[in-house]
Image (cartoon, rainbow, N blue to C red):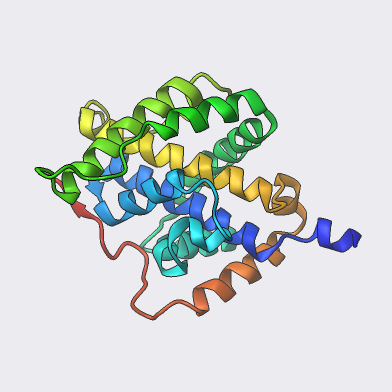
Length: 233
């Protein structure tokens, strides 16, 4: 039916929360020097999950993107909070607009999508005998950062990340940021695949907000915004 194509689907809202989850991590890294290994693991999983059963399978469940759900609610609601002040909301919203456009470009470009798929196939997924989980995660993040540089950075609009020079000049921080940006684009592609469109956010903002609030209400009470990031040395 025509209304099924017009109104945003729940799966699209889940994917949009995935976008916000990654962009929230980008902002935390670039502006505040805060890193969240759990968020990185979720983002790596999302990028490498190319044949999911549904939207939630990309992330490993709704609780995995709890921060993204709460961020989405606050951004759509437009109310400033201590966890997400107005200036930070505006910055993340700008990132989101750029990333959603990039997701549309990737989905529409079969050759680019194929090159991305081939690049992801060589990202390590198993630990060697002398490695720990943290070692594998670092290898994956660095590999995905290179994928972002090679295949997403040349596209327009280019996501220009704002933050503190100290963090933006740090190689490990910049690798983490690029990995999170790649995950955000992956979620944006999923959003498009689920029928998400930018005009829906303009004309059906309240509808998407209601869906995001339903998702937030279904999360455990412990799933709060900014619960896990901690400063790096």
